[in-house]
Image (cartoon, rainbow, N blue to C red):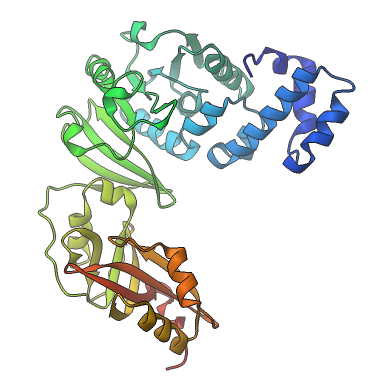
Length: 396
């Protein structure tokens, strides 16, 4: 697809309504039927857009995705709506009323900002992407707050705006780009743009090394539903601060510069910190809150003797600790009549599906096995989620 204009005509919009929710298995038959009355290129474009809208539901929800316009890269790189809404809310808390959204893509972040009442200049140099952003602002009734401009972001004057938001392209012809200086535009350019604005937020990959975070920035790692989504560098807030934010909520854990937790023997409970906590290097903060320590100095599992609620980690009650041995695990699971086995790993090369095939769990009960290291030794920890531990495992 190189032009959205045909889909924005009455005929194009009617076709989009007609192909909404088309089963991929029925696409050929639907296309053959529609091409009798419509141009083949328009039918192909409508079906392609329908596929993109179906993919976009996971990020935008059905109500918005079914009205929006997407490009393949736009679906892939767009921010999840819940994360964009959180960032927009934080912008409003900072007193921001206008934002220059640079590298706006198909407009997901601009939409969230506008819905928070913020006036947005949305800029992208790709004509098709800018057209999609413009169409989306119109489709969602936000055109009055979102101005879309097709331009090179490095040539845009951001002085009239309260804040700058930059979401550099982090994918190239060979997939994801891990070097921040290979982003488009490079992170160094985005940082300079941020430092010239009263407030700024730079969306970056969550795997960014902490040493690459500028001293002027606050670094925030965000997860949604337990899945790490992004890191954000905030400027004009708290330089040097580190936080992990978990959605829904939001629930935010602020770093306090604690030393690494001590390593201790495995206790009754095991805590698995949220990925945003781990990426933000805030495992020590969680360990302190549950009076726990690490099972290994290189593994982000926390162990404790008592169960203490924390929103920043999932808790499990550990019933068994075994040296890594598939035969022993298989015998234990057979004895406990474990048929539903959740396999988690950290610090182990064994793949969960491979282990399941070898132990062949059977029975009415469930358990969780952690493939990990304890004080350097390959270990299997068996247990169950703490809130359900009383019903896990077979007869004693």
